Length: 470
Image (cartoon, rainbow, N blue to C red; front, side, top):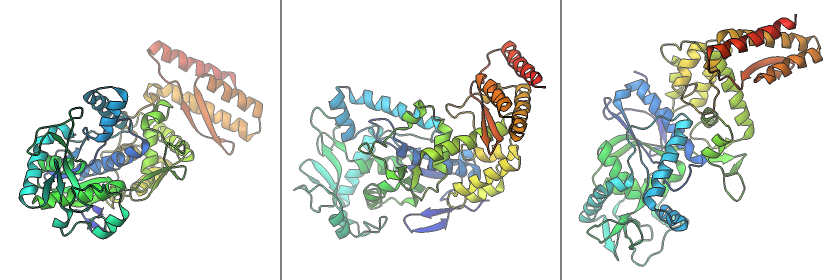
């Protein structure tokens, strides 16, 4: 069995992962609040934990891994969006949830085992809140129910801060009904124009933190293996999840994993800087979903990730080359041990990708295809790539011969003749990429051919042009 090591935020160390039950390895990852399109930063945890999901399935078997990622579909941001737009809340959340699923599919993310919506688990949340009140860890005040932070001695252990430090440094709601400024809301009242459910404390809705604790317990049990999310959730969201779950008597998660944040061209992504964009913005601009995924995976998940135009261009160039190598090739029977070893060292994806570069350089196309698959790369489910498989072997061979002739012309400084070849190929949708005067690769921008007759015509055109150069 592969030895998997993961960095545990809770212990601040890399540990050998030992599942509670190898027959059912369980992971929970905090998902989106569905009120708008997913921005580029939202895609990072999805892609990071998708790779971990794939790795766990490889090690323990696909049937032995349960992955839960939630949707927050009751939230003040959603309420505000409904008020601004005049649309029904249910209509907004249904639409934006589907947007998220569509966009994440286009960057190659597998669907989790379960994707619960908070509004489906209100009863479980109410029951958990009642239990916390009964055990003295929560209290009712002016229609609200709040968690009493001072009742949990280990509060702050995940983030490494004391309660006094957190009060000094945090923006907390100073409300007269709070016993302690750090006490957080488990339940709050709803007016008639807002979503609400009946409860022992009156009509209201849950606080943000309680939903994940209730859904994780219901779907994964009181004690499970891994809890993940962005580093921005470490405090207060994850800190509060731990506190309420442990006080309710649940073991909760053994391993806590957090991915670092995303920047754009070295700066924090923000609308004020004009560098804020969604995943859909990139897809609509023609950036393949696989390119987004590749750039995201090129930086270790625990380091800040910088999205740049240069990285995007390099990723697209690399992936076009790799796809050209694996087209029509039977993948190896399993990923390379070197790739699995890198991933098993706290998801060292950059190290795994270095092995993919080596396979490409050494012409090991079958191993490249099989090993890329565990990273979610080079599959046929990624968006915006041309259907390379529609280019027949005869056409590929003829293009390769023309590229060789073009390279020879360049080497012999026959610039006009070389330019004629390049221009003719470009008119057929075939773009050459050169490096120091030599062709490093080509790609077909319009490969879709609807019939055998059209494919034959394309092959004849290429062959006749090649013969005209003799």
